[in-house]
Amino acid sequence: MNKNTFTSVKLAKGEMNVYDFGGVKLHAYKTNDFIDDEVFIVEKNGKAVVIESPCFFENNKELAEYLGNVKVEGMLIAYHGAGATFLPDVPKYATQNAADFSKNGGGKALIDNFTASFGEIFDNSVHKITNIISEGKITIGGIDFIIKQTNDAFDVEIPEINAIYTHMLGHDCHSIVAGAGHADAMIAELRGYIQKGYDLILTSHYTPEDLKDAQTKIEYLENLKKIAAGVQNADEFKAAVGREYPQYSGQNYLDMTAGFFFA
Image (cartoon, rainbow, N blue to C red; front, side, top):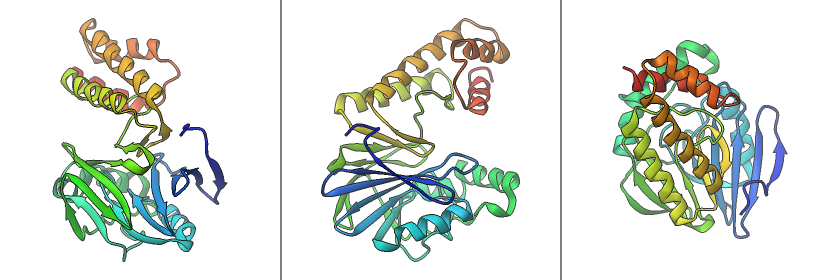
């Protein structure tokens, strides 16, 4: 499946890109919210599973209305635990570390920051996890998923459409990289995607990407390490990276990366 082979449905605020795999459809919801969230819906035989949740009230309402003609069998809540007014009665699945991430860990800190930044338009209520899951295969609504636990939460493989969901990629935007060791771990993960030959890489803050994008990101991460080794401080690092990648978005992520490399 080519990442650009989809049917686009314009909504009042967001946009839905629908990938048709035959027996399975992937609905990629571009929220157009303040943090560029993406939410994914896997649909099969009139049943659907939602991966992640929108977290602004406008998007919650819009996506719930869009899903009115399918039976939502469950939601996989990994890195985005806010937005609990969205489909409150649908079973919520997460690993224990993902649940902890949203309620007490780094996810909670992000929710608190977003609440302070966006106020009443942001749904800071946290989804109550009804089903704690572990690594391995799980079937929801007749659709198989393979759960892979990560440090903060979990990634999701979707075998029937040869896709993987992870938190972030973004081939032409900066990422939060917590030092050289973290860069190496990200590179290893992306090389694993290439080796497995996924058709699509789904992430929380970007439209679906492919293996060429994964290779682009690997080269970016390798270059970040080289740049960091050749400069003296965070300001020099940011300036050098900016010269190399002048069109990249995500300056705030680059700021955080510089802080990690030059603590």
